[in-house]
View 1 (spheres, rainbow, N blue to C red):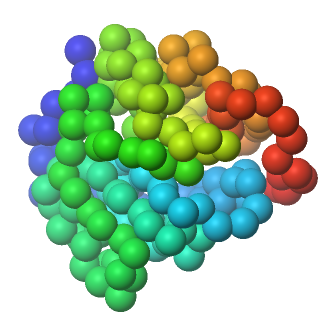
View 2: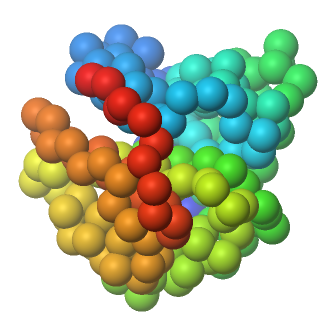
Length: 196
């Protein structure tokens, strides 16, 4: 069973930055590698699923003409809105995926450290909705923790299930210390050099 909102409400009630995304060397390095894995250039329309307190949202905003950031927690949404106040191209919304998947099309979809909170059925549904909402030439970026977890799926299980249901071509697969990065596209063709 996928984790529900009440679990995340408790997590955000206990700490301002529950995953230490602002201070953890792991998180800071992961964000750097995540952005480096993106194809070069700007994205006309992007979707970030699981924005948390907006640390990565602000960094993605610099590459996007429009960015919709989602989170299941109303407190996370509030904090991301505060952080992104000066970024007019960013919209932040509370949503539970896959049920509340927004209408596209999106040139970029980012699901960073969120998929393994879902069970396999919800991962498959999210993957199908992501593929259906992707603009021609668009890409989907997955980041998943690969360490031990008490979530419904592991990071490796979540990434594999998403890729299988999405039907996309793996453009990049990179295993880092404790996490993996996967770049998917439904269309063949090179995206240029993807640097570390």
